[in-house]
Length: 542
Image 1: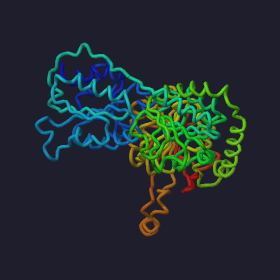
Image 2: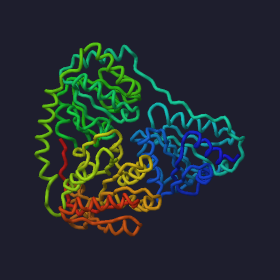
Image 3: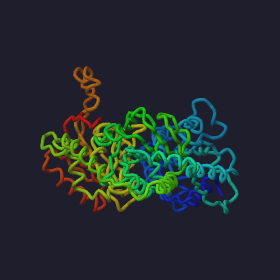
Image 4: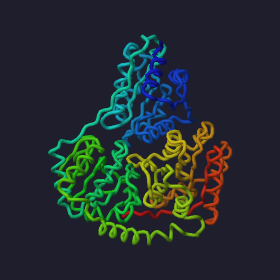
């Protein structure tokens, strides 16, 4: 058995049924022989993004895998790997490498060395007999602890070598840990005594599948729940205790309740300081429940730390609080306060969300989109910049894993690959990416991948013919050299690639155009709707 075939066999044993990649990489062909579907992209970065989404939407049960050529292919993939690392998403990265005798020669890209800063573990195969051990280490890292990309570099001279047939490989175990009982009771005492507790949930709730436990604890404490962008959809945003998701733009009620809280319980979150996440108020008493001890006191000082799986942690906290609080607290007053604050905040934004102005308001486009689709059966993601800030505060998720939020790194063009990967993970869902005319310039050619691979997604493009959020940063460059201008007919571009494409300029045409796009998707055709919008720079930055 050749090493390349042995790797494909191990992938199959670990439940991999799709491999993303770009040739030349011998594992792609061997994977196909093993019954694993290869999906070839137009650019390596997008392939990593697709693998990222597959891992997220299946909670790692179908692990995203990306294989690429040595040298330029690996170099092109770096951004996608870095994005997955910043968002704590497990992806198995399988770069072909230079022959062992050339691996450390200057000018040859050595992925095991160069990608160590954006992977949890990076290891080259230097001995054909060690393939099973190396892959076992890789999958153990992918399935346990803090989830991040893992890299196994495969020198081209090793891939063709013979290795003993692997007949006894078994999938690696996934282990969970829980906080110490004494720490749980200490945290429960603080929560039971709190007058205005707030729960802030991150994507650790998604990875643990801790949705019921989160809601149970919130209702027991009558504690409002906000989420990070990555944690959005972990809590039904129609629930009376829901505060929405915090990013660069946030709902008004979330900021208010965080500022007024006497205890903040962060669960499944890192509390990382970022311009694309909501700022935690200073001087608050904070309980930090996270899987990774490295998060503790990294950006936010905490009074208590609970290290462990979010599902186990929330379940233990609920039981401890139930011993201290008889029955669920009355949430009526808190729910009324949330509703009143949201109503006041929405009053400021409804004129934009329902605007009939031309060029179109991007807020009107996204508001109409939300009314036109079945939100519970839709998976949506934003892109960097304005689309993120115009979508996330107002889109109300109702079911888990129906919003792919991100923001630790903000690479333009990330959303297209996420939507395609989501469609592979959840073929019965409507999968949407919302992006702008800047983002499509980075990864737009991979819309052809959606057509070729029969992944009927909806791509909503907001075209304002400018880098709108850069206008106040580059006034002279814009006035003298038009440096922030962008142009293109992206609906025609989509049609040229074999998809459905339509340009929309009239407010009354927004919903009919969405209906036509959904009909094309139902027939199996990816659709791109290009909305001609104004250069809107307002955002709910509270």
